[in-house]
Image (cartoon, rainbow, N blue to C red):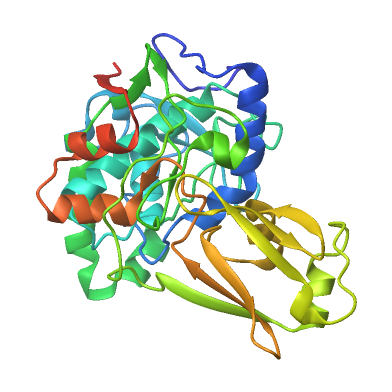
Length: 344
C-alpha cells in the first residue's frame, strides 16, 4: 500500500479487464456525485489521530474487522487523517443515505460502502496517492463529520446515531464478492422502474451490474423533475457536440433511442446523435431517463429518477426493506450473482 497503514490480510484484485476498469472509474468520477441522496449526516465519535487502538466509546460493537483496520483518509481540507474502517463507514453511510431509511436498507448500504471502500483502497488514486480513500464524493464516497452530523440531525441525532452504529456493527466485516474478488459496488439514488446495465452506461460489461427491476416510485422526493432551456441556452450547452442548432428550433429534436431500462441511449439533436449520458451531464439532468420536447418557446426535458442507474438503487433498497426484504436479499437482488462473505 505504498507505506500507508491500511491493514488487509490478503489483497483483492478487480474482476474487470484493465480497460473496463479504467472506463468504469472514469465514468464514476462524475456520475457518482449525481447518484446519491445527501439529506442526512452521521454522528460519529471523535476520530483519534493517529489510531493505535480504536477508542471504544460508541464503537464497542464494531470491535471486529472494521475496528482493526486503519485507513489513511484524505480530508476535504487537504489534511490526512487516520481512522478505523468502522469510523469511516459511519460517516460514509450517513452522508450517502438518509438515516431515516429502514434499518435493512442502511445495512445494505453499509455493506456496499464497505466493499467499495476496500476496492478503492486496493486501487490507488492519482488524486490522493498518499491516502487509501478520500472524502470527495466525486472521487471516492461522501463523508460527514460528527459536528456537521449533530447539527444536521437536530433532535433526531441520538436516534439516528444509534441506527447508523447498529448498521455498521451488525454487518461488521461483510463484503460483496464475485468469483472471489471484491466487486465495484456502485449505487445510485433512484431508478425509473429498472436499474441499468453497466455496458449501456459505461461501455464495459460487468456480470454483476446488469439491469434488474427496482420498486421505488412516486414516494421518492423529486422523482419527476422538469428542466427547460431556451434555444440559446440549449445551443450554448451543446456547443462542440456537432449539432446544427440553427434555423427553426421546432426541428432541432429528432428520434430518441432507448436502452433496455428505458433510459435515453442517444437523442438526435440538430442532426447529431448525442448519448443520453452526455446530455445528462451537459444539461445537468438528474438522470438519463428523460423525454424532450419543444413547446413553442423552450425545450422541456422531463426526467425520472436520479443518478447513473447502475447497481443498487438506494430508494429501491428502502422500498424493498419496507416490504420485508433483508439486507442480504436487497444486495443479491441489485448485484447479480454475488456472494456475501466475511472479510477478516
